[in-house]
Image (tube, rainbow, N blue to C red):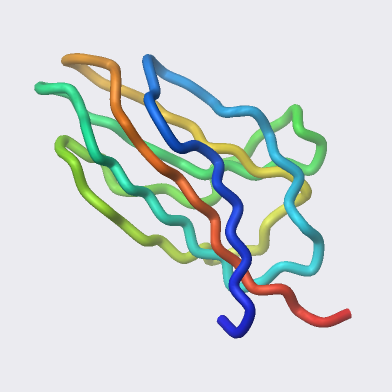
Length: 113
């Protein structure tokens, strides 16, 4: 990535199954990498975090999926397909306490016009 741009989708406490608000993604972006920094997760909990994409900010499709987590961890996942007009983070808890502290960032390069 020559000129890395970052879009922070969430940075802080999450409670329960949550989808963040959609954020407009800059056009002409390539080489997307999702970063998950999970600094706290309740005991007995499994958490799946995804970055989803949308063309209309209404209908959402899974795009970058992080492996299920049961403890604090950092993970990078590269997108294998292009982004769309909007992105958001999605949190799905199973069992245990449904809270965590997380940061989800989408990093990407811009291609020239």
